[in-house]
Image (cartoon, rainbow, N blue to C red; front, side):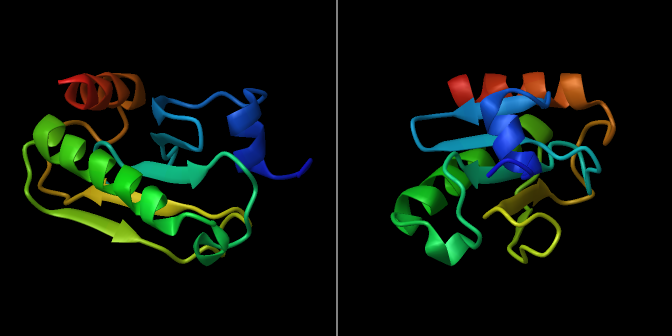
Length: 121
């Protein structure tokens, strides 16, 4: 979809602090984070709603992978998720550590590096 900001991130025409990518999904840090490491997990193909993604189980496995990495990277057991979908008309799941997480909320490059390291561990 030409005017979708998330499709532009997938295409690489809008920069993002990407932390995860596979054949079907990508995760990147939110530019207005609720806490350090707040990520958006999206399908690479454009679907309007999370419930439209054909293999929603695979989608939630990626969300779990990101949440576990956030626990490790930011020293918290409490990771929240949120599915609303009215902010951007592309399926997306917010995944963010509690506000008790260790780290600086607006250090996007540093938080992305921490999260990528935890995903590689």
